[in-house]
Length: 410
Image 1 (cartoon, rainbow, N blue to C red):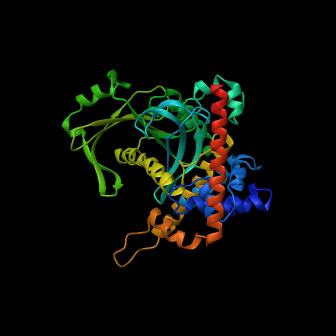
Image 2 (cartoon, helix red, strand yellow):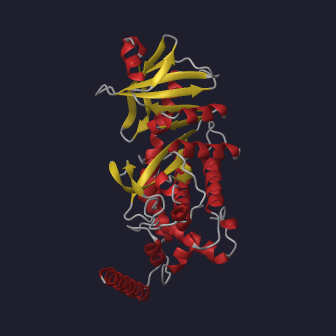
């Protein structure tokens, strides 16, 4: 909290943002302005809502502090920047960026809000270092709607790969280094992203569809057609990294590609040893690297899924109940900070050998232990006060709905 204190001009928001981050790290079953304000001992949620919506502070500057904190403590010369998006199912049409769109969270097309995250994944741990909200064309085509949601009226549409390139550029422009980028088919199928990464000297291992066409010395082929031409000796059994139940072994093969630009371009193919299912990756490196290195980077992509799981489960990343963009960016940035704290403590704990047959502390266990220290005392009077406040608020909301219904029917 000392790292970001300078971004707040007054002591009141500094104290309140500390309470909000502690609330995000708490064991509350549901985390929003109401529940965190009650947990922190405040009389109403007004202060928390003011901090997210109207107080003067720059979420992007705090994001930069989070990025520097993560890199400082999880630094790895062979780190991988993993990019992916996640969606939050939302009701209504007024929440910024919401429309009916596919989200992996629900596994189908839903009314949802989608954001793209950049995760720094090193040997010591991983945490998010940047975020961008995906603003669909249905929003950017209506400047007044954008302004009402706290966006610039001149906001232009950007694809998810363009948002990824924007975040990677910010990371590199800040003076940080990561030699690899990984992502799924959304990003692997975008030639503009390849070109941007190659121009910055970044290697990448990006998933592509089986229909993806590549150019070899023998001509142009679809990825799945090339896979069928591989001899049995081309496949090697390698681990994509350790999982909860041990190493994740697959069969791997690699094919050299021709490309007009500099560097090494290859097609990496992964085969499931049980089902025979194939996955394909387009790869680039500034110099030739062994197959084991490409496999390591491809396996790092799952770190972003782990971040989404722990960020949402432990730090309330998806529990924001806000409509406007400034409030969204502030909430997710502070949730990233809360998760980064857990990741850094975990890295420190893993550096110390355990004894007595214990596994090293996990982020989940660190949060449980931390909650023994941060839980504030709550009086009966405070609980009663919040009960009265909720009932008054619900009464006012109900009366407002009835008045609106009467006017509409009239």
